[in-house]
Amino acid sequence: MSAIFLATRGSALALAQANLILAQCRAALPELQFEIKIIKTTGDKLQTASLAQEGQSLPKGLFTKELEVALLEKKADLAIHSLKDLPTELPTGLKLGAVAKRADVRDVLIYRDAGVFGAATARQTPAQNPSTHPVRRGFRAGLTIPELPAGAAVATSSTRRRAQLLALNPGLKAPDIRGNVLTRMQKLADKPELDATILALAGLTRLQYRIAPTGQLEGENVPQGLLATVLDINSMLPCVGQGAIGIEIRQGDERLSKICERLNDSETFQCVTAERAFLAGMGGGCQSPVAAYAEVRGGNLHLQALSFASGPLRRAQATGSPDEAAHLGRQLAAELKP
Image (cartoon, rainbow, N blue to C red; front, side):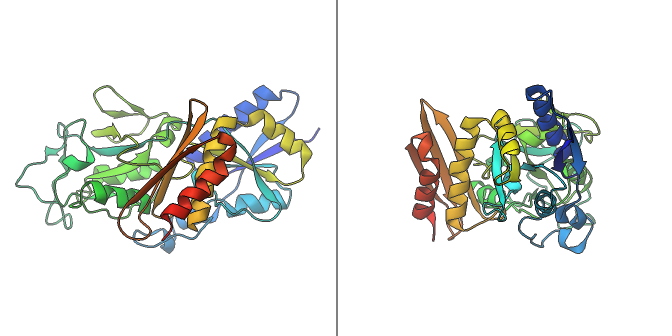
């Protein structure tokens, strides 16, 4: 019997996620042969190209297009995505076949330790460039966004995070940062003009990074002296699909659909269906200044969302049956759309 190929990007996080799904495939269907196929995407190529430079926007679907082409050309069978990267409109002939059980959706504020680097003081001002402010300042463990001093630079490439950062602390700066998880950590450790960055807890966990009880960020190759504070969703609502791994397949392929039935977590699928319907209704992609999070509690699906698309922060929430997931998403989009 021929192997079933799981297409994935080659980044450390993408491979970690693909291997999670591979293990689930082999456990659920031991009689079948599954293999990983690494495919380089536009987003990977742009890591070293001009479009990957801070301050420039990135095209839609840059981390998914080549994987989808492989599916359509039958060079792969299952495409494994960070669901937050998967556009809400899929190419003709493809569908979201399954979603794995969701990991923790929260974001993490990462910053330098005052015990290792210089502590921030009232006299210090953030760097305009390394020559005027060569000291890499640190902060105490448990730092929160409102506690950051005026002018502090929290680097992020996410419009969603940037908008919420500035809503919590209008005095902050939020410069762009690009690169994989370890690259961003290293930039924070090395660049005195940066004070902090924000990363997804799910990605850190899948890469085997840990937050010690002291707040210290631990793991292989983590730069010395980094601390982390997990942010609650009330202060930093996650992006659509955050923490979820999506499995994309060809429409009409019954064999692949049956495989996906064994891999799908129905509660997670319902939640992300609501979130993705909201995003689609807002007419945006993963770079849009919107956020949404759904969870099932007491048999009901609770969806909360926010948008900065029309300027000031606007919030909305709705509750209904999990079977109405897509309707709830569209309902909130209608409330928040400019």
